[in-house]
Length: 344
Image: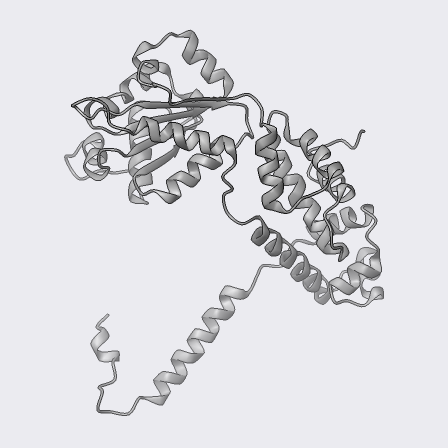
């Protein structure tokens, strides 16, 4: 498009027809951005059932959703008018948006700080040849490992995050995934260029390649990847579960473990200091509330379970028009999220 033909000369009055058309286009574009898809009726019904089981009255739901009580009861009983469905959908999605805003971004819990420090140790140059090292970050699921390394990749353009899976676990597919993460599109280097050369050309010394779910990478492939810290000054970070860590240690791969030099984290279960940091950031206070959150959080997958519990509890608090996220709402949220069976 030749943009010069659309520009009004400085010595001529603006074309009002063009301005009106542009204004209409902007209004339409803003409208398209603000329109949210209507939730499925079954999904709305499930949310309402959870609220009613939590003791939230129909009258409260109707007031919060800006509906008449009889309209809500008719909808619950099967007469599902489109305008009522839309009102309930808007109300519920607004709640979800508010909860998402409250959650904010990444929270630097103590374990996350240790993980970041380990990766920084790995990318610190050593010796005259400026070689980098390897960070080993292994442990229980739901302890914040993946969230931390994803955050680090968002914050630093020279940190490349790759999630390993069944298709991306061998040397060439892993390099292709690095190229994809680096370029933002298909993992193809220039014609005639090796992917390894493309990576080292685009990532400077001191960069980091993070491979999450590293327990899926064969140990022989891990050894091949050592060319990056050894030859190109690009550190590696392997993030995985306890099974992967055991396999790595049992194999006694000195080629890898000798390059760790302190950049080594094993997380058994989330610690109290991690849970307390999250509760403070989320504004959850009180002795009974802390005791229950500790029970949810200090297990395999605990921080993930805790996050889902608080998210569901907040939805109930908002729907009830309540002021405080107390132990009762936390327990109901945990049940709704499938993180707790309800037994004392």
